[in-house]
Image (cartoon, rainbow, N blue to C red; front, side, top):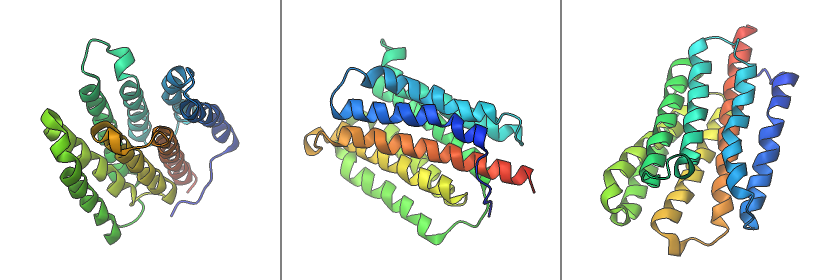
Length: 222
């Protein structure tokens, strides 16, 4: 199992992302106008450590990680970037594509161990989510079902990767779970779940990228 830590230049490249993540979550908690612009700054800042690590091999891994971050950025800003389009379907599309990029890199590049049996809990998560939220999704039922399948697949495949990636997968799944309840069952979700969505999201995305770069660097040094 890869154990190499991130080298100093790459580690420091995560600092701007970490700082803006803290500001963004705090802005959500106090309902500040900073929440909007800081949200759109997150993924470009997370791309920085990937770009610094662009010489790592294989190039496919770097390209897929960067694609996942860019697609996530488009998902984050779907309403701002495409004001004439349907925001929620566009979010599902862009984040769905981001998860597919993560799934490919987890499956083909980053896997370091066998698929653990406990990871089948993610299939149960998908079934429960559809059973609870399905009646409230209306015409988006099929899109939500497909997106949930891709999301659970990302989390499940992350369990075959570095533990940091696996934790990131759990947090990303947690973020989307809370968000789904906020969208389709808003009356059941208190206000604090809004910053909770982005807290788990920023941690999840950051850990996935950090764990991926740790794995790629350790293989280069073998």
